[in-house]
Image: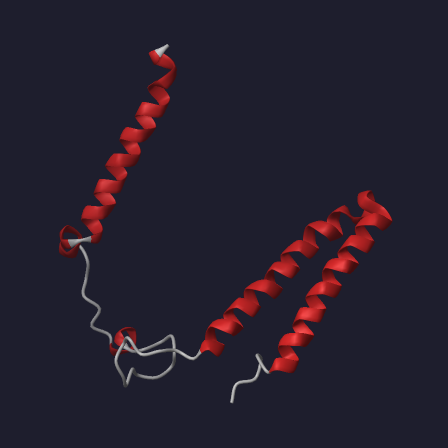
Length: 122
């Protein structure tokens, strides 16, 4: 009976060992093997495009998060369209009507956000 659990035990031992090795490489021990980035471009600010001029704990505009959430919502819409398009031949008219309702709800939400000015960057 215990022989059935041997693969799981081996997996846990290997996973724990790998986690410890990766942890040690990521912390102080790994600095012996890493080369310090001396390139000025690698050390520059690259996400926002400008150097930080205030405290790192400053508040961000809520619109930044709103646009990110809107991107995720409409990206998920496209993710649902691909399997629907592949299975459209087998689901028939019911699938077409269901996807039409789904898209109509998302379009109403998009129009609402557009009218509210959530997509405007002033």
